[in-house]
Length: 387
Image 1 (spheres, rainbow, N blue to C red):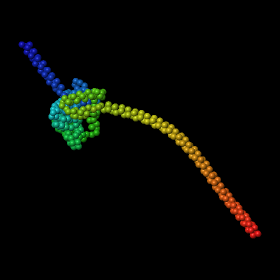
Image 2 (cartoon, one colour; image 1 turned 180 degrees about the vertical axis):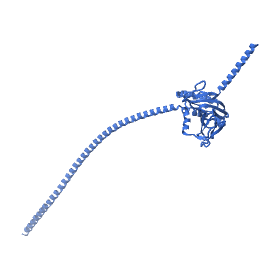
Image 3 (tube, rainbow, N blue to C red; image 1 turned 135 degrees about the vertical axis):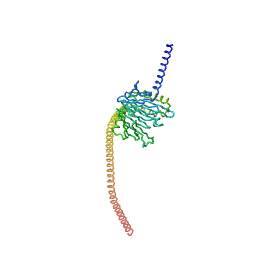
Image 4 (cartoon, one colour; image 1 turned 120 degrees about the vertical axis):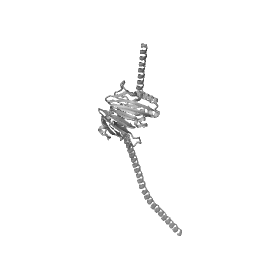
C-alpha cells in the first residue's frame, strides 16, 4: 500500500510540475511584438535578437554599448531601446477587434523611446512605463526616458496641447509616492530622484537634447541588419506580413507599419549614394572627355572645312576676278571698236559732204556753159536767118 501511495503522490507531483511548466510556456509564448530593426548586439536571456524575431511577454531585452533595437508591438506602438539598456515587457493585453488593452513595461537602466499606438488612442491612461524612481503614464504621445544611477530624466517629444496638426493633445504624467509632474508641452523635461518628488516641468536645453539623442544614436532610424541582402529583407517582410495578418491587421495598416518601422540601413544608404555619386562623376568625366574629343574633331573638321572653303572662295574670287577682267577687257575692246567705228563714221560723213558740195558747182558750171553755148548757137541761127 505504501508503494502504491508513493507512486500516486509522485505522479501527482510530476503532473503539477508539468502543468506549471505548461503555464510558464504559455506565458513565455505570449507574443508581444516583432523586432522591426536592430543595430549592434541585442539579446534576451536565451537568444541574440535579429530583425524579424518575435518578442514574447516577460522577456528582458538587453542592448549593449553602441547597440539598439526598435520593437513594433501588436497594437502599433513602437518601443525604441537605446544603447546600454535593459527593458522588460511586463504586461501586454490587446484586443484587435476593439483596440482595448493594457501595456506595462519596465526600464531597469538605459533609455527607452515610446510612440503610443492603438491601445493609447482608445484609452490614453493604458500605457505605463515603470522606472526605479517611480512611474511614467503615457497619454497618447511620444516620449523618451533615460534611467541612470539614482535618477530618471523624462522628455515629452509631442504632440503637445497646442499642436497645429489637429492631433489629440499628448502628455506624460511623471510620478511617485512623493508627488507628480505633468509634461504637456513638446520638449519639456522633468527629473525624478529616489525619495523625492519629480521636479517641475521645464524646457529642454541643447546639451540635454544632445544627451537624449546620443542614447539613440545607434538607432536613430529603424534599420535592417547591415549585412542583410534584398532577398533577406523580402523574406523578413513576408514573415512580418504573415504575422500581422494572423493578428487581424488590414493590408493598408500592414504597409504603413512596415514603412514606418523597417527602413534601409543609413550607412548602407550613404555608401550606396556615395558610390552612385562617384559613378555619376566618372560618367560625367567620360562624357566631358568624349565631348571634348568630339569638339576637337569638330574644330579640326571645321578648320579643314574653313580652309577648303577659303580656298574655294579664293578660287571663286580669282575666277570671278579673271572673268571680270576678261569681261572688262572685252567691254573695253568692244567700246574701243565702237569708238573707232564711230570715229570712222564721223570722219567719212564730212568728206562726202565736201564732195557733194564740190560737185554741185561743177554741174552748175556745165549747165551754165551749155546754156551759154545754146544762146550763142541761137544767136548765130538768128543772124543767119537775118542774112
